[in-house]
Amino acid sequence: MTLKRKIELKKLESIQGGMSQFYTPQSSHETMLVQIPPHTIDDLFVHHFQTDQLLVVKGSFVLVILQNRQYQYLYLTEDNPQVVTIPIGIPHSAINFNDKPCLLVNAVLRHGESHPKDYQPVKKPFPYDLNKVMACQNICVTN
Image (cartoon, rainbow, N blue to C red; front, side, top):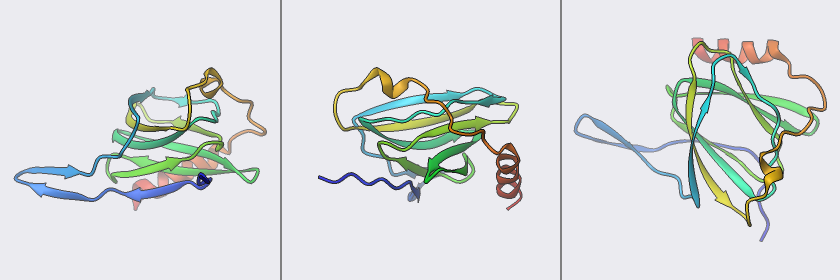
């Protein structure tokens, strides 16, 4: 079995039921509720035995992805329900410059036993471009 090594961003489908909006859940082996504190620049992490499926449920943050020796910055917000899938072996991080915490759900897919190294930070090969992070937030907020 070959695992995908590409980040995927998928808008969630939903149906209206009365006054409520129902979104399709993500299949997972484990579901985690994650809070990213305000004014946070997190370390890079790379998982070898899990795929992350992230959905922001309150607030917003910038997801940092390291691929091909370049950082990509993805703005994720509660205002645009979408799931980002991060396969094994992809270094990633979170930046929250907001005054409020961001709350997200991680629907984890396991590819073996959990390993402590999956949750230990890895050294950044070079600094984040915080101007690009700010630009990403500003562009996405105004659109």
